Length: 343
Image (cartoon, rainbow, N blue to C red; front, side, top):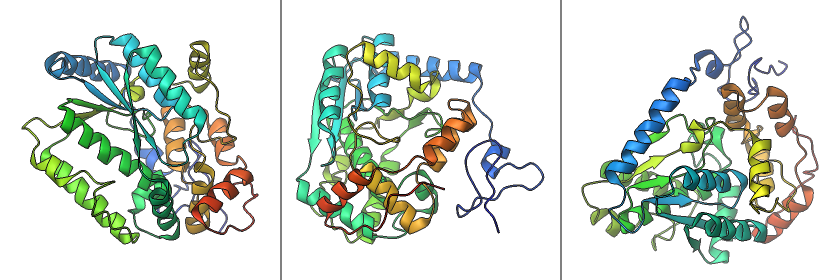
């Protein structure tokens, strides 16, 4: 049976679990999608501002911010501090062993521009390479829904970031954790955590690591159990303000360049900060047969933040052979002919 692409977004029938309605020509997600209205977005922003007033100013930091140095996180930090200059921010950049020098320089520059404190979270490179190698060699360590959202390598990296940002927020007694997720990535702008949820998320990631053959007994990647045990009664909240703001990639890049952010020096259509991304996409395609960014790009198209043509172009963009080979060499893995167009 030939592949059928949703008429509204970019998901297609070759992706496991995606069914295109013959009558409407739409996938299940587009048929059931209800975007946040302008009024609902305004209400969410007002709720965030109320939270800032109610819980801010009590500790050294109000916000623990995930700063990759890429365009979305750099822009979100810049706009956040323009809108709410009173917020005290600790920006955490996870150096996963493949973070470009350009991204590290951009992250530091954005902290200088916004008056935010910078902290680089680093782990020994050989440990990271071994972790990502095992993620690449694994299959089905994460749930089917997680595989829609990212590759096994990226899911591992993102999970580490989430675990350690939550840990940092608890240690610093910071009320908010912030990510630069778009509307396609974060359907819920405000997530109020609980100690029970934090413990469950830790246990789940520990099991996922074990499924990949990774024993994190030193808790390099997991939230330390001692930190959870010493947590006060108020758990931090996760906020996604970018999904409430107007999103236009060209406008974001224009704004950033004007304030001194340097455009990426890596040839990757889906990442402006990580040299592992092309290999992660290649690995996911080899294992599962679909692009790991398909769901997120579909979400951007569905929400109107990206045209369908732009989304399809991103999915069909040729992967970078040099970046794939560079990452494979670091991970001591072999690759086949990855000089392909994504079809």
